[in-house]
Image (cartoon, rainbow, N blue to C red; front, side, top):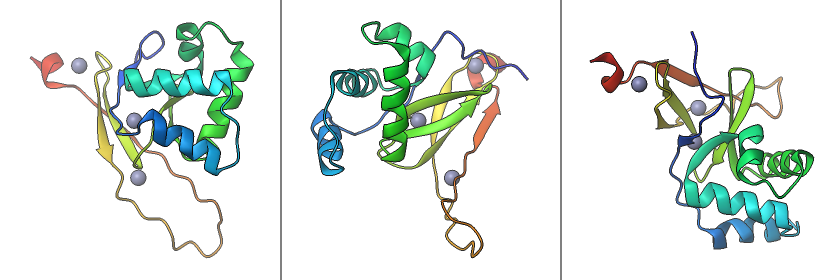
Length: 142
Ligand SMILES: [Zn+2]
Ligand SMILES: [Zn+2]
Ligand SMILES: [Zn+2]
């Protein structure tokens, strides 16, 4: 199976506003630094699911390390949804927990609401799950 995500980003709509995003940082007692702001602006205006590498190509002003650091923080604060596709983390704004279904031919992507509730593991903490569905979209199956 080959998904060509390397040079593209995929649409993933989120209803998070910039105001709400800034508020989340402030509530968690983090400063709104320039790289953080630039990433949030990019994600909320383009509605994409994108890797750190590609994000860095789009926002050229900052070094890659500060992009990685900011994304890690957003992950911790549950501002972004993280998924690993082709061994690379891809990020999108996560106003609700969700997964994606991706067309393995063209990379077209749709959002799937996450209704998995994993609260009952007595022997585990910080339980994390991810799920990526792949298929062939209608356009590609014609
Ligand atoms: Zn998404
Ligand atoms: Zn397709
Ligand atoms: Zn789920």
